[in-house]
Length: 637
Image (tube, rainbow, N blue to C red; front, side, top):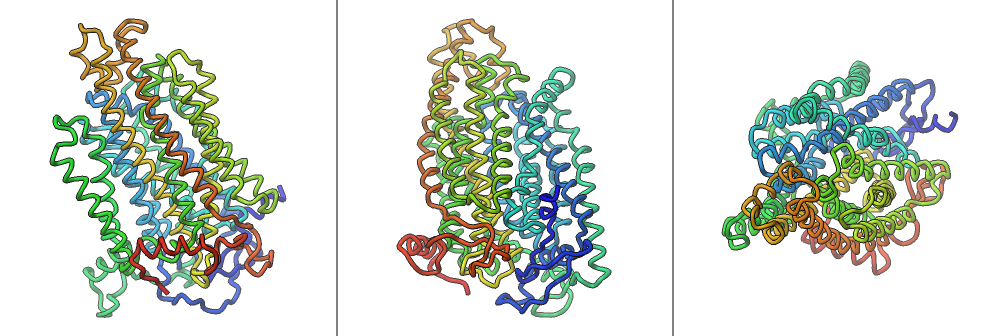
């Protein structure tokens, strides 16, 4: 039990990155000199969480973390239930093939919402950002439950994905606010720990909804459960925020209350403009629209009569490419860019973000969104048995992440994060090879469980260690010395998780394009002549596909079509594993305890070797050259 006490933030990062001591449950600020960052440049949400951090008692922080766990358990269970229902929801509109489009919409929203949500938390505060996310989730649940067509269902994903992903990033930002680097790896796994239980009960609950009610109630019920689960954390933040206000520790908000910086008079227009700039609204629009206009057409091309010759599809993709070219040009001149350019000069930060992108793209090509449908149709498994297989990935990744975090904590930061990343990437690649080897009709469920376990273990090791080194790179980079650590760690975390979700969107688009291209043609080739006319209905509904008797010529033709298409997806995923391995070796390594001066009393991580030097070897110069080319060579002081 003594080991757990330091986990509850007995050390709190100060306003200028200093460390304060905690006695009697109240953190007292140690006097520190002003940093290179001007006081007025620190955003109000950051000021607020730093003020609240001074008032955390051990009991209050325990309640807050209990609230984090309760909310994580609720969202985890909801995810397991609704994942098992999604194929049936889309099939009810006879649009099963558009499942990948739904996942692309989710992936794009998941990607673009993380930076602005982190900014909202910095501008307004953590409590306000959490509350916005809860409202968005509830709105998404309502729209999905009431949807009468696939367009409404897909549109609901925008609200749901924005809220759900916002909760994910805010949980990680809160953990970064209230823990040191040595303990952060362990605490960052806390929101994933409910998967150890929910992965097994979620599919059973989904099957119960399908048997006793409808898939719609499987979405509607969370409009009540999620707000109730948020109460402990919300009340904890509210109470401590009120205490900070009474003590005069919280400054007045600038974004929506204060006057314009130029006129010094109250102005809603000036406040709205200031907020738009703080959130980098133009950058968000360029990035989200560009990504959407490229990826969504990839999933729709198979439904177009002229395919790639459709001028609308070509125009959308070209427009998306143009917007993505404009995005870095705008960011290099934006007053408040989504990502500070200084971070892009860190090889570890860039390699870590790219690793997250590629490993999640592999998962969404090989497993999501069609592996579950493959189990139902090609292997004839019921929902209650297919669900646990697909969710074994989450179970194994959670176990691996928690195990790695505990080892890092118990050994005081040794072994360092990079070996976990390389080992995880290797296991991840071998798991894809195992899936290719076992991809045949009649394979035993135990083999599928084993492959998913290895895949999840590799992902868990990679994710927790990579997120840790990305945060460490943001904190220790020589280009960020003297900057506010709360703000840069939050931005770095958001950037990493954003690239992870971009990977999911790209992977979904690739799998959707392959699925839409191969399944219809294979069905027309393999189905008996008597039912060839039903190929469109079978393609559009997983429920229609499983309606044919197992062992019949029709079902064998459908199963063969699914099996051959999934095999192609796996070979493509294996090819994407090559950059996963390359990026795993490309990240730098850190000692998680000890500053640059070698003082082990400093909680900030210390880079090992040459990877984070401001000047130096050829690798460092190459990454700085890449950042210079991508962002127009403009450096920020």
